[in-house]
Image 1 (cartoon, rainbow, N blue to C red):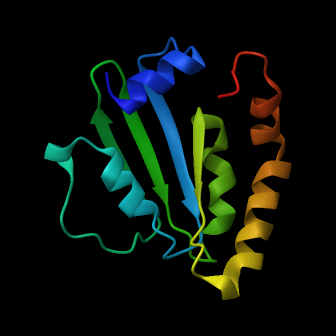
Image 2: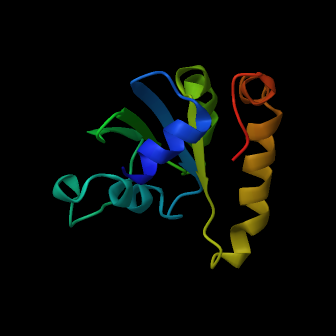
Amino acid sequence: MGLFDKLAGWLGLKKKEVHVLCLGLDNSGKTTIINKLKPSNAQTQDIVPTIGFSIEKFKTSSLSFTVFDMSGQGRYRNLWEHYYKEGQAIIFVIDSSDKLRMVVAKEELDTLLNHPVPAMLLKEKDYKKV
């Protein structure tokens, strides 16, 4: 049983398909994290910056994942909110070594958490704290 299968069990997920948004500033490591989450036979060697967004699909033994890898460039960040309703999970990546943009990352995360759709999802009763 892999990490995702255990996580699905803890969270009580009954769906077989999960839509995940991967957000964060540009060059924070979003695509690298998604690549590491994929099964080893599906991982890529060359990772290039995401322009706009990309969609990655992969499966574990019991779940099918669709991950929306959203560009973190300033001109694309206002598009994030259009994908909130599609997702059951959000991964927000912060590059801890990028001290100059830590304030920008905090502001973007605050904007995300104060948006009505993710806030509504956080208040729903059908999730469990891990």
